[in-house]
Image (cartoon, rainbow, N blue to C red; front, side, top):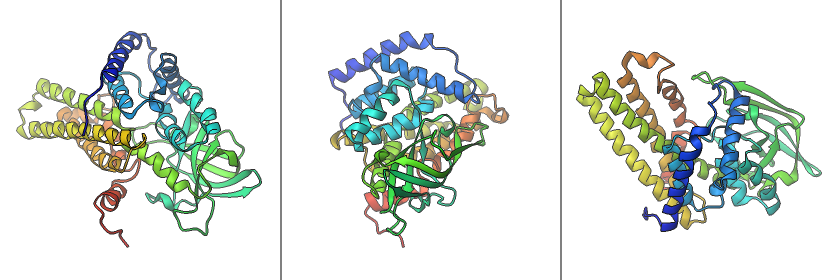
Length: 377
């Protein structure tokens, strides 16, 4: 594993640090978590600043190592998270960059990078559970359009999105993985209904989406008809391989803050807690090295992360939950105060073993594709 950096990469790091130190103090206050139009405007405004400074193209036109440096430094500096831009920048955009036609790249990538348009993810369905290939949203061909009917759930940022990366079944007679197609659906199309969902933490960044005879141009199909499962694996490789890079850095920072808080409130005297903090420190250091390994593999593989992303996602989601369970131990009774740091993070961490593919699914991928174990019957 090559984790060293070239002089060009170190120069990029230094230049980025200098720019962040200059611009971050000038940012406006973050809007309320419940103000999604305000959060969209804030997130798009930050993305526009990155674009104007020449950093937006790091997501697709730079090497995976440059992207790693960018995500590491912006998180260390406390820069805004991608927020409403999450799906466009980290899922749909990289997929279109890897699989789209020249016309599709020209149409969709620049608006994402400029902060002009927001994407949401229409993958999961109410009756499919964690088995994405069991999706039943149908798309029948009618001339130059697909006519789509069905429903999606846990659709990230649907209430403020312009576009949806949508998985549909175009051949119901084909084997489950063979009849799926990847479409880019405009969210203002006739027949699209969005119903926000409120999470345990009280936020509403997910939604149900109902599709009633929605017409999507055939030109919005990324990849061939019925080849959507392969395209989806590209999407999920980005989601599991590099999308959580900044969060690993954030968790390492939180771990240091937890140790300082434990020393201040006397919890540090508990040797069991100290051992737990030490083990978490080793865990996140290992996860960072695994991230670098995945990036090195992506460098060698044309920029698309490999199945090592499933190993990372599996370990990271559990480590994050344990981190915030430890935060509750450090806080003591204050862990019930929603206004205290880390309390809402603990609630949101519960979703990480489900989001981006359940831990059970990740174990199957590791067993079959990495360890070569036989597929279950």
